[in-house]
Image (cartoon, rainbow, N blue to C red):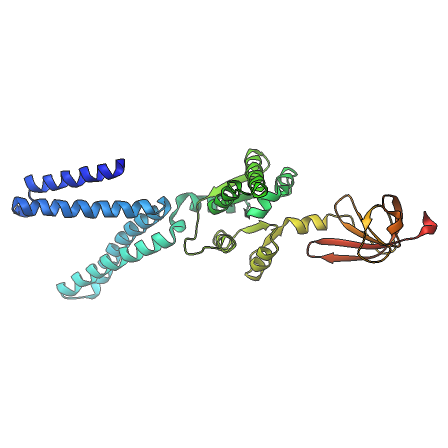
Length: 329
């Protein structure tokens, strides 16, 4: 309501100014009309500016100014090819019109190119030999990234885009208690990462308004920043790899760090429940790896030694198959 009243005051004052100080020697009523029209145009421009993010306004402004300077320089240079004055003026007018237009379009669409913080940060990162790693929602909620960073195994800068923060906030505000808990856990993990002295976390404002899907935005941002994506999302992992973007998958790292078990080895497990097949039991290792044990249903609730028969590597982890031999009890 306050901004509406302020706009009315501006329109009234501009109209009065046009009436009492008529421009171009116009009659007072025409001067008032000119003031009214100009004030309405300014307010319309103000509403459009309010609808855009600051970085878009900054980019379009810098792009337009750069276009004016470049257009003036090109006009001065290329007017030398013309001999008559009319052609020279046309060439200068052409560059002074077309270059600011191009600068405005480039600045509003590719505003990140003109962000001094990004440009300086990019050179700084390269000179320091560091790299960007963009976190997605799944890896933040998972939480293991904080423990990995505390071990100093990850170098460079962790990048969290604003659209990922918005997605986390949406999840944290969900009416579903499980989703709400997951979202709040993700925000806690981010807070823990920012407090850590082992890693640098950077929140970036870059967005891609023409792209609605969050995963597609992550891929475009990774291309733009020449960064790696850190994720637990299997589909995002595959799509990013198909487009040539390096991906760090926490699940794959965890699977790689699991102890190697070879066929023929003997391991000790606790038979927790029965399996799907006849006389089959199921156990789990300390790291969560499932162990399917033949000839062990009657040993449920006991710890036994089994012989590993095979190991199956899947996209979600390992499955170990073994056999219980009563003679080794």
